[in-house]
Image (cartoon, rainbow, N blue to C red; front, side, top):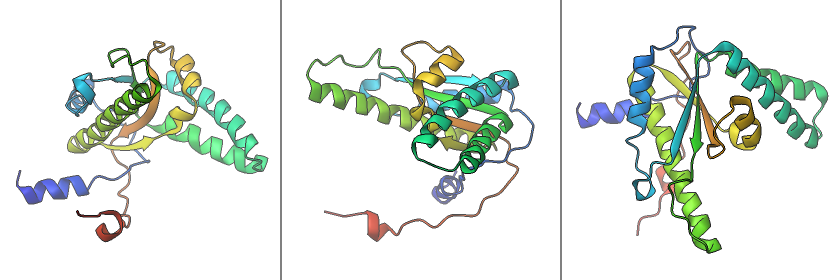
Length: 202
């Protein structure tokens, strides 16, 4: 792959929210997850964990439980009931209609157990950044396989709910969710901020 081709590949990834019903083979999903593990991580501790959900009843249970937590949060925002139901229905539909749902979790077990508050927080943040690196690597790996995906941050707003719904190990802290499948849409490129607005050279 030439430098130009690689840049085109990286810049052609899009957030895909509509999928064909076909489910990617387990071998492809395993390759995607394996590639995700080549992301950099603090101290090379690899604190990422993945829960792969293909079973429709499990997806429905997760979607329902997350919807309940979501509704509680929305009520605190004083939204109209009609708007709340609309948002909840969209959330549930996205999870249920995704061929594969991959939950990305953080496990602090192997990270350094600092006692002082400052370093303890810094260690946690480096672990979160490590997991985020794996999430981006996962999306690019899916893109390389001709699959589409979208990053969904909602699990971090309902971590205990997600843990209970999937009966995850207590050390697995939900961070994000990826909806993966063969694309049924081709989103247009969204405008990016100009480099001059976001970069400062020294």
